[in-house]
Image (cartoon, rainbow, N blue to C red):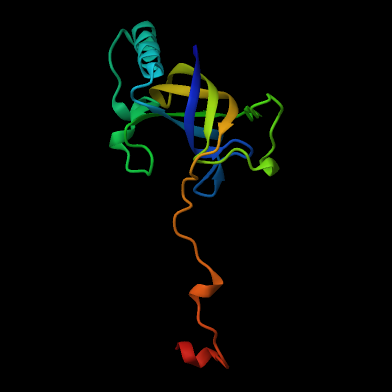
Length: 173
């Protein structure tokens, strides 16, 4: 396993205080971290992946969907273009702290998809009945600064509706 410290990454799909749910089932704590392609950390992560492949997979590459580090230009989500994305998860809740290193809670509202964070991740090679992959464990996240929240584009307001007088169910049949 290889520990990686990611600095000033944009956080996406944040589920740091409660496990994410998929198909109605609780899964893991997780987050996706967006790193500009020009960041030297990209080369460090690629080198760590290559070292894991050499050590555990005889240097053979894995299909792109089997590696947690992906080219954001190939992902059709707001903010991903020009970045590399690395998804990390854990069964155990990660440490989440503020700029002063004090623990943060969900109620603090500091950590959200779109903010900038530092993160401690651990790359590892999976080789079991579920296949061969390169995954990342999510160990810790530190809030760095605010950013434009993802998913906050279109909202609705009471002003979007007309006031209705004496409406009955028959009016909608």
